[in-house]
Length: 293
Image 1 (cartoon, rainbow, N blue to C red):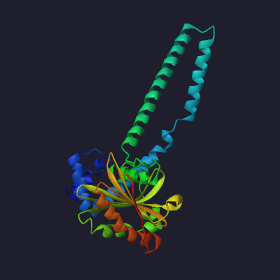
Image 2: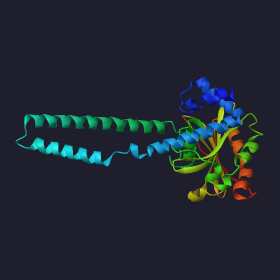
Image 3: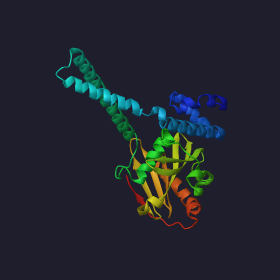
Image 4: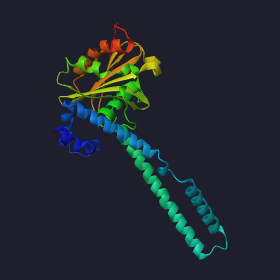
């Protein structure tokens, strides 16, 4: 696949309309083409902003005058139906209104159930570490990896690393070289800021050998109980991911992937010193290692 072919199917790729084989071709092309990676990130951000603008548009809100008129009509029909002098035509109108209300309630019940099913389906495809609460930062990071790096279906649009935090500027230039020794066959795909479950992450993605790796960084200012330098290992199922987490004094750093557990762990250890220096301005690195499954 060349750049011209790639640009012709970007929108179809972002809309999940391509065949599996074509998707693989897109991913292989992005692994070796920085320009196309930038193009798809820009296109994804534009689509996210358009979606947010449409959903918040006044044109999609219920008109207050229409709602008021509908309430008045229904109230009038009910009163007429209860009057002794109600004519056969009025009774017929009431039956029609009642039937209409029944249809409305039926549609509402159907839509509510569809929404509920949709939410349950989303929850079912979001990986988690079973020993941790769903809102634990580890599970939130897992969800971001799944829905941003794998499925590309985050609710909110992505944004630049610099917009997320001045400390994240040029983060990819630290992450990618630091991982080069142990992940020589992996290619840089994208770097941005993103939000999942109201938690903001710096997110760097690499791909190689049919695997996807996320480096996710969250500021610990809102997670005071997590501070302290330690490395923790986790695993999730359905889908199966391995997570290695390291806390600096100010940030939580995650490496999440479908790689071998030991290789995933080695990737985090390769990042721990350079990222600690970059984020905290410290060369100190003392750690305890814990495991959770």
